[in-house]
Image 1 (cartoon, helix red, strand yellow):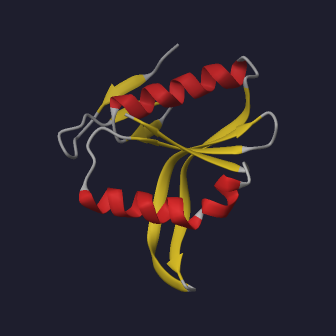
Image 2 (image 1 turned 90 degrees about the horizontal axis):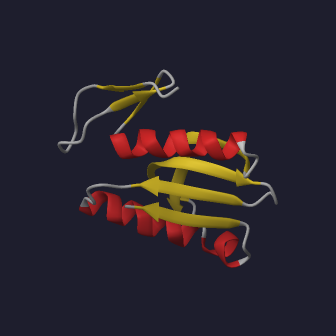
Amino acid sequence: MIWFKETGSKYRNARQTYNDYSYMSRKEAQYAYELDLRLKAKDIKSWRRQQKIDLTFNGFYICNYFIDFVIIHNDGTEEYVEVKGMETPEWKLKWKMTEAMLYKKIAKGKIKLTLVK
């Protein structure tokens, strides 16, 4: 069964509730549902939502970034997934900082960054 419930909005998106958790958009809630299906099918090992990433530069804390989903694949690699409708300048900057911070892990194939539009 799917439990979706619409609530307030931000940037004209429709907040959704799926499995008693509030998501920023219908698209995010649908993605969580798809992850649950992948988990049941044993296509992935696990997943979690709203992973906090501390963005730092040369050892100085800049801000936090909350990635929408982190998927742990069966081979142990991690995939950071951001589900986006509207891209704000602030988000674009944080995304670039996240790419830069995780560059070494991405290059070694330990982490994959994915943007779902």
